[in-house]
Image (cartoon, rainbow, N blue to C red; front, side, top):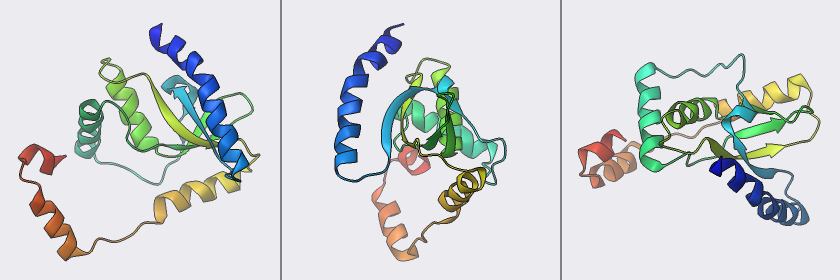
Length: 153
């Protein structure tokens, strides 16, 4: 498969980036992985309405892939447990079925040993810590978008 070969060839470049990140003291790594190597959470407190999920799938098809990276924990068996970004990954899997986007994505991960409770704490923190919109600025920005399709996007 062409994509599989491209992923293998990319490995050296990603390792160089990860070495640079480590030299800067950054505790996380990047990887380009097949969706098959990602394990979604069995229990996720976040949910997404079906229409919103389909909108996300359409956005990924339009954009050609994920535009923000899931955060994962690399298990000892080599699989990556998605701690943050489960809906994005699910939408990526759905969009990739039609061949409209690659069958892989870029992830940010840790291979540090984490207990179950540490992984759950990260999952909940990533889902719960969020900002708020300034209604006036939000309206101003939204009004800049004249294209109806982009407003729905």
